Image (cartoon, rainbow, N blue to C red; front, side, top):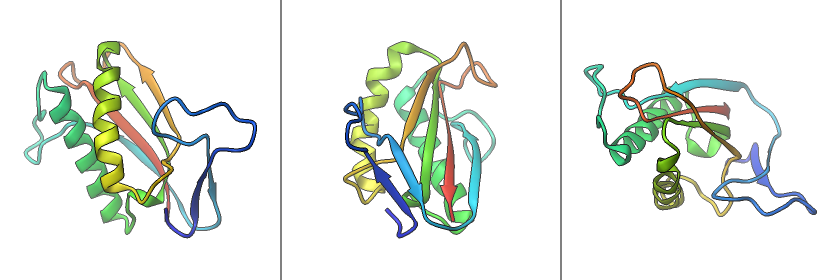
Length: 136
């Protein structure tokens, strides 16, 4: 976590149901509202068609590029909203997140996350989209 972003699980709150915290406290700084990141390859094509793991990896790499371009990093993230197209991918999402988050966050706590299942994303081939709020 950065000095200005602190993740918390307040006393009396139920246990988090995954790698997230119930609250983020931000001390100061600009707030960045980052559009949902998709599995878009550098040439603009869909990366990992029908491959959830590849799309997950690309989405978080693209998010990292946006953060870096804004002078931030993953530890400046205040909150995620994750959109999945198939409920069958929830278990894969949880496993991939459990493997990735300890590598990109200082931990042991992680940003709040809301996970939604939607009918589809902007293109049929997209399986996951992740938007974020960050403090700079």
